[in-house]
Length: 182
Image (cartoon, rainbow, N blue to C red; front, side):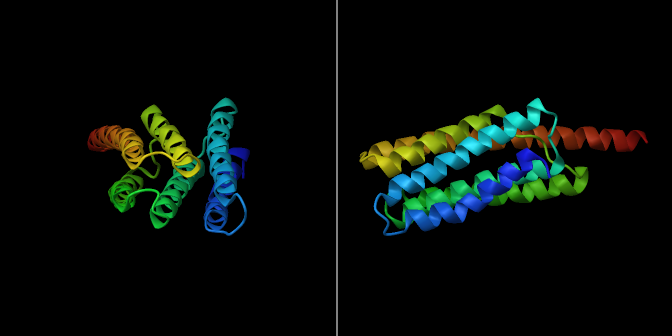
C-alpha cells in the first residue's frame, strides 16, 4: 500500500470520527468536528499531490480517493441536516447524484476495468463544498446565504459529474472502436 492510498483510507476512518465528534456533548464539538473535516480535506489534497508527483496513481487509489470524498461529504450533509443547519433537500440531491454516478461508474468499470481520473471541476466543487460546510458549522450565517453556498457547491459538483460522464462516454466509445477493429 502506497502513501496516497493510506491517506485515502485514513480519510475514510475520519468519517465516523467526524460524525461522533459532531454529535458529541464535548465542549467546542463543532469546532473539533470542523478540524476533523478540514484534516480530511487536507489529506485529500496531499494524497493527490503525492500520487502525481511520485507516480503512485493506482486503480485502488482512483477508487478509494473519491469514495473517501463522497463518504465525508455525505456524512457532513447528513449531520448538518439532522441539526437543522442545512436543508434535507441537499442530502437527497447529493444522494441521488451519487447513486446515478455510482451506477454509471460501475458500468464503466465493468467495461474498462478502470475508472477515469477526477477532473479539476470536481476538485473545485469539493473545495467549495468544504468551505461551505466549514462556514455553516462555524459561522452564524442566514439561511439564505447557506442555501446560496450549497447551491454553488452543488452546481460545481454537478457540472463535474456531467463532464466526468461525457469523458467516460468518450472513453467507452473509443474502446468500442478498438474492439471492432480487432
